[in-house]
Every structure is written in C-alpha cells, then in structure tokens.
Amino acid sequence: MRHRIHSVLRRLRFTERTDLELEEVLCLRWNITSLTNTYLSQSNITKIWQRAFYRLAYIQQLNLTSNSISTLPSNSFYYNSLLFRLSLAQNSITDIEQSTFQNNATLRLIFTSGNKNSSLDQDMFKNSWEIEWVDLTNNTIIDILPSTFRNNIRLPNLDISGIKIKSTYPSTCNHKAELEWLDLERNSINDVDPSTFRNTCNNWLRK
Image 1: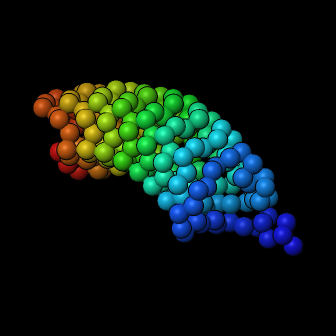
Image 2 (image 1 turned 180 degrees about the vertical axis):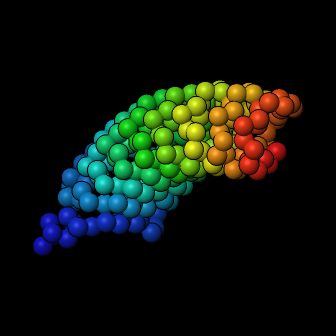
C-alpha cells in the first residue's frame, strides 16, 4: 500500500519550517517519482545536493522560495526536463553556473529575486526557448551582456529592477519583438541608447 500511494503522489507541500536537507536519497527513501508540483518554501534548506531531484522526471513546478540556499550545483535540474516554473527567490545564492538550465528547454517562469547574484552568465538561458518570465529583482548584478537573452525571442516579461546596472546595451532588446513588460526601476542607469528598443514596439517600459 505504501508503495502504491507514493507512486501516484503528484503534489508535495511542506507548510511549516523544517530542517529539510535536500539529499540525493530523499525521493529514493520515500519512493516518490511521480511528483509534478513540489513546494519547499521556508523549509530552512541550506544545501541542494547534486542529484537531489534526479528521480523527479515529471516535475513541472518547483518552489524553493525563502530558504538559505547559497549555491546550486550545475546539474541541479538536469533531470527535470519538464520543469516550467521554478522559484529560487529569497535565498542567498551568489552564483548560478552557466549550465544550470542546460536541459530545461520547457522552462517558462523563473524567479531569482532577493538573492546575492553579482553576475548573469550570457549562456544561462540559451536552451530555455520557451521562457516567458524572468525575475532578477533585488540582486547585485552590475551588468547584463547583450547576448544574454539572444535565444529567448518569445520573452514577454523581464524584471531587472532593484539591481545595480548602470547602462543598457543597444542590442540587448533588439530581437525581442514580443517583449511586453520591462522593469528597470531602482537601478543606476544614467543613459539609454535611442536604438535599444527599436524592435520592441509594444513594450511597457518602467524606468
């Protein structure tokens, strides 16, 4: 009976603060492989092991908000090819490696606000063709290279408010014809090149 119940479990939510460690054996120990939605916010998680989610091939939504995660192994989500919503907001992440989302082609929404990222690798989202919302609010990113979102031509929502950028590159948004919402509030931008938004006719710019 225990095996049968676990084999059909779709949603898992922790509602109180725990001392949960996301180890490689977590899903093995509980025999959980069918989860599609996992909510682990405010669980006092400090570390994600390299293959913590490798058994969750069907996971679509993963919420890790408001923990104490400081690092992400590069293959943290490699086995979660169906993942489309990921929240890493309100942690202490200082760096996200280039290959972290290399196998997440279906990723549509990612929230990393309230972390300590100081840089954004230009190849981070190169394989995330379907991405629709990127939230980088309240990090310490000082520069976003023009090629960072080159493969995300369908990206309609980009929130980079409350970070540390001082200027925008003319080619950053040139290929974002579907960009509808761009938030640049609370930055240190002192100049915007007139050609920056020449191909984003329908965008709503907050600056």
